[in-house]
Amino acid sequence: MGLLGFLPNLWSSTPSLLVLQHVYQGQGLSWTVPAQSGTYQAPVAGLTVSDWTVTPGTPVSGPQPPDRVVRFYVAGRVKPKLLCLVDVRYFPQGNAWVPYYRMDEHMYFTLRGHRWVPLTLMNGVPALVTATPLGFANAAGYYHGFRFAQTTGPITLTGWTVARENAGTLPAP
Figure (cartoon, rainbow, N blue to C red):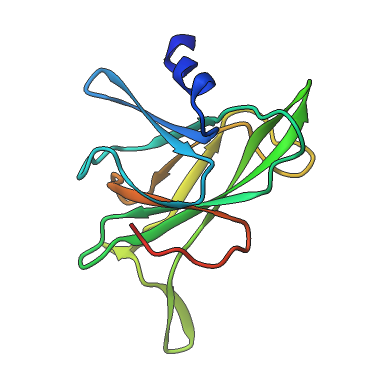
């Protein structure tokens, strides 16, 4: 997506933490994740894609914004389940604070016999989330963007929550 795809984010009243992007059926798909705490539904329900790319949100001027956590949820059998967490921290760049990202996978394990086994197994393979960075990490281990996917198949995002780091838990979308 070219520069014009990002222009609406520059003028929005609420800065964006990040932009989720994917090319779907030849069309560029772009979902903005606002910096405001809350629970958000995916703009397109039931959309299943192979991967998502996290690209930078809006640079912010003034004092350093607080760290945020974005929790991404995927479709589950009964209710949405947590896929991964994305830590967002702002770093200085010129006269602005620019968001950088670090992904933490969230997996559930159970003790079977004397071994810990992931609960999310498909054909004996754990459903892991892989992250491919876009560029190098900064000194604190945060990236300017990355692509993420599941090892066992496509992702159906149902929504996400945004919270200040350590702000407690928000309900799943």
